[in-house]
Amino acid sequence: MKILKDDKYQFILQAARAEFISKGFKNSSMRNVARNADVGLSNIYNYFKNKDEIFSVIVMPAKKDLFRFITRQHTEEGVDFNSMSALGHSEDAIEEYIDLIYKYKEEYRLLLYQSEGSSFSNFRDSLTDHMTQISYTYMELIKKYHPNANEVSCFFFHTLASWMTSILGEIVTHDLSRKKIRIFFDEYFRYGTAGWRELIGI
Image 1 (cartoon, rainbow, N blue to C red):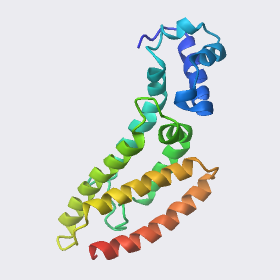
Image 2: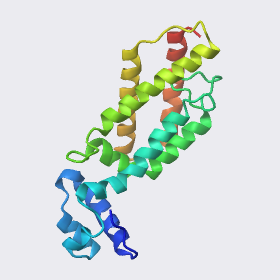
Image 3: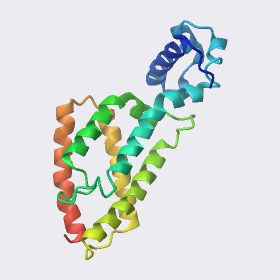
Image 4: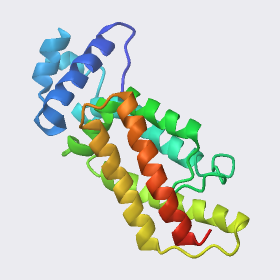
């Protein structure tokens, strides 16, 4: 990618983001992006190799921040062993997650539902796989502090991760206020914590 020192780069990104949000990756038109950015179509390729690279620049920060958040919350420093919730999240972590959702709501909607044809078309599976692997780390930490904890099957972790991916999708496709999202997480973690304690025998 060749970044030139002028405003056209940002104009192209803004126009492309609006086009992707409106039509999804597959149906977006670079001609529309060029027109809305007030640049020539050929000029776009002075900045980006292709449509997929523009899409990547727009959605990659959302993906990286989400994966970093999930990983950090399942290190020994991030896990709240007092709550023993299904994913170990503390109250502060839940607020941070809501902040991420608010910051990148459109980007997560693009990644989950409108990325067909792009290099991010497998985002749903990659997020589920990442959370599944992180769940193993969480279980190892539980075993460290609670050696008699019951084992949990790999398929359960995979199904829980898939459910969490679907929950993210439901949140970003509904017009929920921050308060309503917070109420949902309060309900979810009360529900999940009781089941998790029963499952692992703590």
